[in-house]
Image: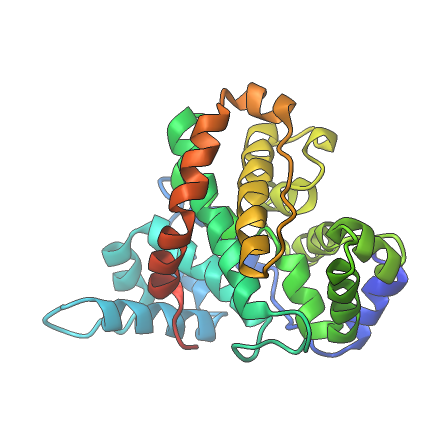
Length: 286
């Protein structure tokens, strides 16, 4: 994969941020918050001053504390590992976008960001309904599941615009990506990036297989949930873009999760309002 011409173009673009492997180590520690040592956690955070700055900004902006929190140790104690994890993944997703609009001209990043949030909300609701995995975890993963698209937006915006142009002519997104990118998709690009940055294997599985869930042999429950959540949010996104086509959900996946069509309809109904609520909460200035 790393030798594919599109991956080479991404590397040669000089737009891809360099993220030390220790960032992935931080996320791994946050996935198991009861097992990590605070001193080691703080030491790893010291290698990421921009992330630390964002977390401190969020906590001091949104809280009514008597004093300003000025260190990561106190911030983690106050926010809890769950909230720090959400902020960290939101940060790394938005890190790929130096401004609110992204670099592509036809592709609308602001609208697509709503799709990512929609996937987060749908994943949360499915996990909550089924009890098959941690719902907060699935919300967090929704923010990063399409990181391959954001890589294209910042590194290869012309190719992303070509993909969007094909979609406007009725070509399916995955087919359009394979045509423009030489046989690979945003999911495969995202999987490569997860490996490159040392992100947790569980996140890599979500990112790499949320369009092809039956191909994964690890973290199948999480991948199945994100597949369904992404499909629900894809229909929401298409409505935002004025596209009347709908995505058909895999009955096999729904059956394996114990999800009825009526529950999917419930998510679809409330998703637009919930996306706007969450969007206001998680967007912050870097």
